[in-house]
Amino acid sequence: MSKLYETIILGAGASGMMCAARLKRKKESLLLEGNREVGAKISISGGGRCNLTNLHLTTERYRGDATLLRRVFSRYDRRWLQTWFEKRGVETRLEKGSQLFCSGGAERVNQALREAWQGIGYRSGWRVERAEKEVEGFLLYSGRGDSLRCRRLVVASGGLSFPRLGASGIGLQIAESFGHHIVRTAPALVGWTLQPTQAFFKTLSGVSTEVEIRVGKRRWRDRLLFAHRGISGPAVLNASLWWERGEVEIDFLPGFSLGELRGGKKNLSTLLPLPRRMAKAFLEALEIGDLPASRLDGEGWKRLEVLKAYRFAPAGTFGYSRAEVMRGGVATEEIDPETMESRIVPGLYFIGEVLDVTGELGGYNFQWAFSSAAVCADAINGERGGNDDAL
Image (tube, rainbow, N blue to C red; front, top):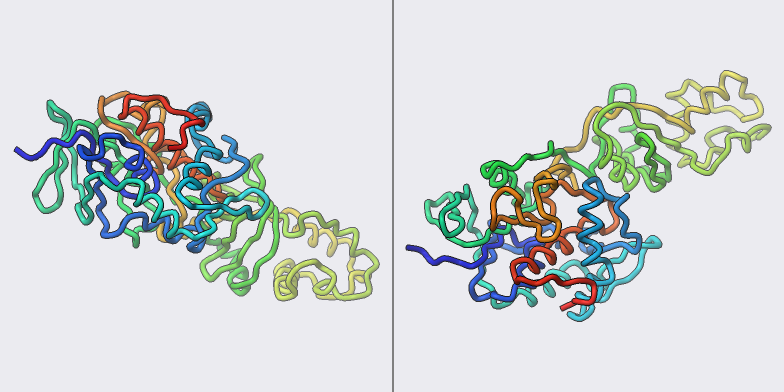
């Protein structure tokens, strides 16, 4: 009979590596990765710079159970995470007012995590196809027919985004096989494709401008980028987390009143605070001549107001291949927030992106991955750590 591990962690991404780093019985545990390299998603995050966390760590920035988030973050918050990495030589720098990036880049984060989990068993390129419950724990099967056994199984396999990096739905499949409910998944933090009415957006590929996007009662003011496939940029990516269907509204002139243009002698494309190519394209689409503002009639002003509240329904998204994260996942009401253990199957744990918790841009998803992993490790260690425990 094969060796019985105390704990197997499925997935060597952010949550899996942090959980492995904090386990005490490392020699009796195994970190299992289906890809050849660990931390693939960390390596490309933030263009290789890695936005670790955010000064404004609030539940409002997440799509998920606010009560669960508060309970996890009350134990392992942003200060804990910064301290944990600083003790391992990883300094952070502040950007955009609240986002904390790794000063040494994403590979420095990976290196610190790899060093921290040294001593645990590790296998790469071992892809799990299914898991079964047995008397002493769990039995994992690979596509090659071999198997592994463990008392506790931690599913840290991430979501469906970036399939080119080896992302798969194995964590969701395991959850379903054990009776867990899966909240409908979808690409998130991703660009939008367009309806025929917005086809002219594609002629502006490469142009970027500041906008305010509204989805329901939520709004974001940040950059929008016109792309070949549609629109992207931080404002769109954040809005995509909350959009499911129907119209969104974009203010292409945030903080600017069209009244400032009245009486202007210059042409509208010059007076509008937009990239000129963009201004001309929108004037044409709105059937407004590029004439001096002083000559614009009442109907023209009415059409121009559309720039302050441009409403349209995205056709869809760029898909998982371009999505930063997956939205949805294992239903959190079936998870104990004090341990991250399944309420359905004892000894089965879920952490990180595989759960139905998704944050906006700005370091929120890495914070969730690391914090949920720390809570899980405490439970396996038989402890209850907190903010003062940065080891």
